[in-house]
Length: 428
Ligand SMILES: Cc1cc2nc3c(=O)[nH]c(=O)nc-3n(C[C@H](O)[C@H](O)[C@H](O)COP(=O)(O)OP(=O)(O)OC[C@H]3O[C@@H](n4cnc5c(N)ncnc54)[C@H](O)[C@@H]3O)c2cc1C
Image (cartoon, rainbow, N blue to C red):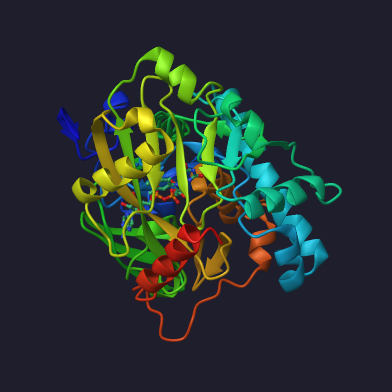
């Protein structure tokens, strides 16, 4: 099941070494302090440092330790609720504005990587979104057919009879292609951002946890594990790792474990048969699987949510392998070389959120779809901290909901996942 050199860490970390910056002394005072050095924090830092603000980014672990170097590297328009669901709740104009932000996030990510010359295997390979039953295929086909005018995403359907031209399996009932969705090497993208932020003049300090934030009329005093730093503005960029440092935000995000494996290298002929078009793949299950070839097409990177309770990668790996083998029986004997997990941040309305709470700027709640959106909203929150009008987004207008008695411990998760797993198994 496991290779001899099996690792419980992201496959991406083999390709891009964990970032180690020179030891820098904690500054006493900065214009902008950013807590969390993932995509959100670094994109915010690039804006504020380029806007001539003295910028410090700190992370409790090494920079990029969170979701930003653990993810599946699937870049999409990121907004989960449909236009019609959003229209019901927020009205037509807001639904339109939110979906437009999703399109902008995808466009921004590709443009930024290209313009900054980041070497991170960003490829517009397109997504195959596979239907796990006939009803879901028909639902997808209706969604592709009846797109809202002005919000059209280029998309088309692949019936089950033609499915093998996209994916070497018969387990699905056809699916939709979204040609503009892209794949990226997430850790290489992070490394590129880190270097860009450093070049812009930001200071980045790893292994420096923010422990307490005090606000007074002059700004903020933040106690960290390396000392106290004063800041005019503070940006919280902690997403799935948001903790008791910011209880008002912790009450609004639901941390959910997501699990990934990488296989050992497979033969080129087999890869060409299983993933002939190099697509990123997801399916219509509520408890979704997402997978893709590695950038060099040697391995399959396969992710999903595997356990009702949080489990460790040693236990989640074999479960994911079982699901992978159900889709591709040819991989039953292929071993796992890497297994890892990380936390995504869901929200009660399944939308991402950005704004200012208790004087603290924040952007978070990407609901498992932040590979593009986190950078985009990081860029926007950086602009907001600079006081720039263009930083304002549709998500600023949406209430960041919580629920009575919820303080950050998602006790309701296990029953909900069980509920959705049963629905998926019953093909509902
Ligand atoms: C396994 C997995 C697979 C995923 N796959 C995809 C995918 O294929 N496509 C997609 O679009 N999205 C995916 N995502 C989601 C995506 O990775 C995230 O939305 C995105 O990386 C969030 O970036 P971020 O910068 O906001 O947060 P993160 O990258 O999670 O960074 C938050 C950082 O905050 C730090 N921190 C927390 N508290 C403190 C503190 N008190 N002091 C200092 N630092 C602190 C943490 O150490 C952490 O490094 C996946 C996520 C995971 C975990």
